[in-house]
Image (cartoon, rainbow, N blue to C red):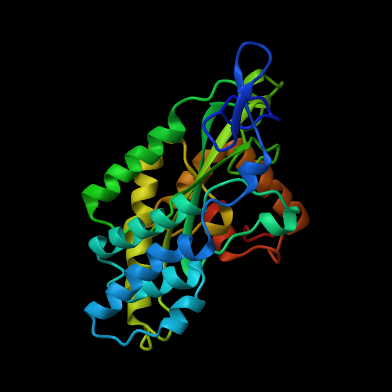
Length: 307
């Protein structure tokens, strides 16, 4: 969106009014803050689908338990009640989750500590990547192109991809090792000062011990996530200059490993100047690599023998 910073996006919720300059803008009114649906109406699609799922399996339905569940608990229960690696089961789950969010959307005003949080459910694997998408004033189409291509690849490969695929945007970072770094510059340009980056995260949920006492289901999901889903994201992202979130990065120097080559791609992403400067700082301040870890050593190299 190129809307002025203090204006609501015209495509979003709110009340459309004249902006005084021959155009339109959106404002928040009292009516906009009133929820269109009650909590029970929002959760109705999830509750009904869970009832049908339990009935088809011949499992007793505890209405009190279902009524006491929130969104995250209902979704976790629905997912774990079927084959979590079956694309058809996941598609049905995604459909009822979409129905929930369609009713849950809207505008709310409250202190940030009450709003900057969400119910993300139970245990899960998350893989998040970042790539440049032009500038704030002149964004390119990479944001949408990447996600659309990823969705096509998910469909064609048959990966069981639960909702959501999260996408957000941020400005560039001045930290040379940030995934959103524009790299070293002799002088600032409009592009470097206004660079825009998109962050995309994919997810797979894990069943609780109640649904997986042996742990086998969790192992299979973990294997699928790392060896299929994450690998697919990296494949699609190659031409977009993709870089993984540091906290989600897993590397291996084994070419047969699905994450093989990741360390080299990270080094190439930052370039020899940044990598060399970081290693020089490590040699100076941490020559024995006491503050390092195996992941950093795989990417930037272990300490030299003379250190």
